[in-house]
Amino acid sequence: MASLGKKIERPVIDNPFLNIKVNPDGSVKRDPETRNPANPDPNVAGAVLSKDLPLDANKKTWLRLYIPRQGKIHPSSSSKLPVIIYYHGGGFVFCNADSAVYDVFCKGLAEKVGVMVISLDYRLAPEHRLPAAYEDAVDGLYWIKTVKDEWLSQYADLSNCFLCGTSAGGNLAYHAGLMAAAAGMELRPLKINGLILHHPYFSGTKRTGSEESLKNDPLLPLYSIDQMFDLSLPEGADHDHEYCNPLVNGGSKNIDLMKSMGWRVLVTGCFDDPLMDAGLECANMLEGKGMQTVKFFADGYHGMEVFDASMSGPLYDVIKDFVHHRSNE
Image: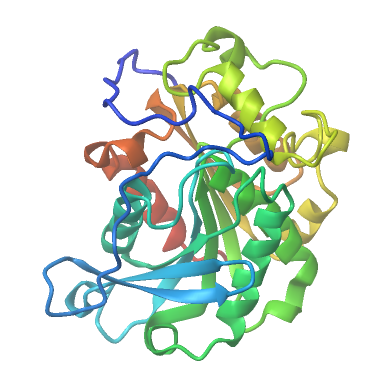
């Protein structure tokens, strides 16, 4: 896990994290972003097909499903696909499931890892503070369990599902996992086999070494990390709330449930990410509790594989190995 000492050049992006403007009514100003439409038409070029389906009309939540084209299904066209249920990043405040960078990342997961991806568009803070996004994630799991959809019935191996997210989505995957573990058999035939926490968004009142040394990070400075947690945590909560700091009180009791069900956890990070140490501390805590834990840390910056698709190959390889490995049941 040692750094190669290589500085990875950062792309120029429209970065909403640097100057967050809160409106008088408590909402946040969100500038227009590039959003990609779904591509369900097999006659349209592309390695991956996608389509959008509603989740809860009252909450305005929905999901985007991705499948590799028939000839690319792993390992043969007759095999059903593992399922990655994906949660986008954005500090719980910004972005959507169809945000261009996350849409491209999910297409890569489907094509390169050989999975069906189900990406959730969840409610954002501060208009909907946590645990709203976690509740939306659990709604999505029950939707997968019960919905009658052609793609799910034909292509999805519901006995081999993983919760995955980037940044705030990694935080969401972790907490949705804790809630799903408590639900247990209620979610069958959906069976979760693990978590994939990609640069997870955790922090606390005590600063980590990477937060201190990278507090002026040009993509995700410390003041932005703090502000987005202030906007997304329950009113009055500090940063040692369990939604922010997974180490509080020694970690959730539901970790034992995940362990008893044989779940595995993959935690990834980059050395030039202020959130690296918090993610590593979470991984070490889970490992200390007996969870099967894989750690993949490399040179780079926060969300690198999302912001620059050309950098995603090694990550996809690690996720592929993790997903297509079957632990003894």
